[in-house]
Image 1 (cartoon, rainbow, N blue to C red):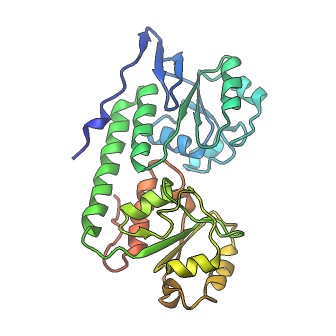
Image 2 (cartoon, rainbow, N blue to C red):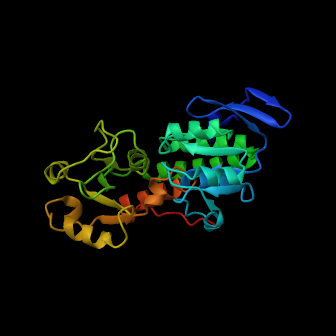
Image 3 (cartoon, one colour):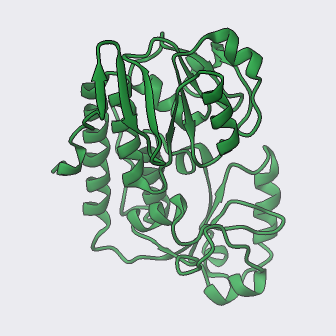
Length: 295
């Protein structure tokens, strides 16, 4: 059942051709409505915009935006922390969408001073991603499309929960960094996904969002499943796997339960995060949970 939280935003001010809304960090943003030229400053934002059908409206993206394929043909305006302001100016956007999880506040404020309204989203957990989709649907006049995506993601999440709720919850270690070894702690996307997928995060009680753990500490926590994020450089997986295989006393190593998982699906708060959840459930519960085939 879809939660009532997805009632669409009521604008603070709505005049002919303009809209004023509060973004996800509490800023009031006034912009032309609906926006016709949008610049996205993060990959998850780009994915949301294209999923809403805003192919023509998106005129600029960050250098990190690699999905969908169509996004690669848009003008590249820079990275998370550094953009080419002249290039942005040349695109004449009527709305810029930024993320609070990577784009510096000073950069957003400079864009505002240059006359470019900037709406910031800041999802931190799975449910927040649904909210961000809802918000971007509102700012782009794509409410129906947003609701359809949200409902689909909710249904798929509930199926994962239903199929794993009675299963044993193995201890899971998600590696997102190598030197030093970095994992996911309380409050992170990875921690949220592990729990939703029917696992127990071995670092789920750590106060740090991305704690660094030495091998001695990992041995103490005895993970039964090890997931390695593909954010590590290409070709490193086999080498990292060999490093883990030296530690036969770890249950996950002993049982051959070390798996690679696509970082774009578990770290990028976009509609594809539901695919990451389903993939994680499949790896945590092999033979008991099978990732559904999407038509």
